[in-house]
Length: 281
Length: 184
Picture 1: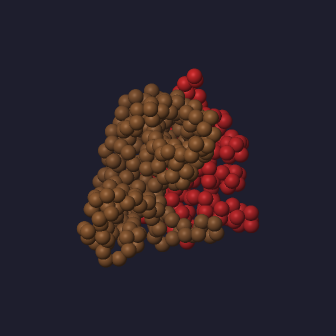
Picture 2: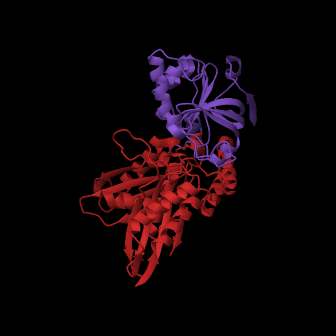
Picture 3: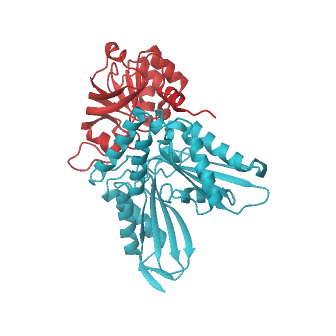
C-alpha cells in the first residue's frame, strides 16, 4: 500500500482549480487560434481575437478568464493500492475547493437548496466528485470548473436503435442549432453514446477531458465525430452566435456497450473557456 | 472597424446603430442580473422609484467574480440575457435605452426594443478578464444583500460591444447565421 495524505490532496485540489480558472489550456488556445485563421466572418474573427487576448490577460494571474468559475467537477482515478490517510478523501476534496476558490478570488456559485430559496452557499461546495478505481498506486485528479452557460444546454435522450447513426447526428446537430449563442461558441461538444442513461452522460462529460480535436481511437467513431463537426459548422452560428464558419472546435464522442433495445445519447457542452487541469499524486 | 461611443445614449445616437456594428463604449453603465431585475420590477409594480432613473441608461447583465485588492472589479463577462426577458419590457418602458448581455432575446423584448427605440448589445461571454480591464470603477448602489448580483454603477472605458438588436427590428443572431449557413 502507498500512503497519500489528505493534506497533499487538499493542496493539490486548491491549486488545480485556481490555476484552471486563470490559464486556458494550451490546446484550447491553439484550437481557437486555428479557428480564427479559418473564419470568414470579420465579426466572428474579432470575437475570436478578443477571446485569445482574454486568455493572455488572465494568464497574468490577476483576473479569472470568466466570472462564471463554475461548479467544481472532480474526476478521480484512484489506484487500488493507495491508502488515503489523515481524514476522508471527499472531505479533503471539498476543503481543497473551498481553499482554491477563496485564494483565487473565484466566484462561489453553488446554491444549497435548488428548489426553494436558492440562496448562495458560503463556499463553492460540494464538488461533483466522480471516482474510478484503477490498478496501481497513484491518484490522478482532474479539475473541471464547469460554467453554467454551456452546461445548461446539455441534454440526454434515448433513441430507438432503428434511428441509428443518422438519428444520433440529427439529435446532436439540432441541439446545437436550438442552443446557439447561449452555448458561448466556439464550443467543444462531448457526446456519450450507449451505456445506461447515467453512463451516457458521464462519458459525454469525460469526452470533454480529451485534448481538443484529439480523435476517438475507434476509426468508425472518429468518422462520426468528423461528420457531426462538419454538420455543426454548417449551421452558421459562429463565435458568440454572431454568424460564422466555426461554431464548434471539436466533437468528442465516447461510446459504451448498451442494451439491445436502447440507444442512449447524451450531449454535454463545453464553452470556449474550456478550463481543466490535472495532477497525479 | 470599431466606433467609439460616449454615453449616455440618445435617440440621435441609437438611430445610427445597425446590427453587427462593433462599438467601444465609454461612460456610466449599470450592472444587474435577474434577482436585481425582479426587485426593480416589483418596486415599479408597487409604484416605487428605482435605484436610479433609467432614462437613457444601459444595464449590463453581470455578476462579477470577487475583486482582488486594488482592482475595481473581478472577472466581468456577461451572463445569459434570456433570464432577464420577463423583466426587461418594464424597464424599457421606464426609459432604459440599452442592455448588454449574451444570447437571444424573447419576441416580447425584441418588440419592446423596437417600440422604445432601444438597443441590445452583445458582449463576449467568457472574455471576463478583457472586459474587466475596461471597467475603471465599480460601486454597489442598491440591493447590497445580493452580493455579487447587487445593482452596481460601473464606469467603463472603450468597453467592446456588438449591436445585436437595433431599433429597426434587425437581429444579428438571425442574420449572421443565415449568412454563413451551408444548406445541404
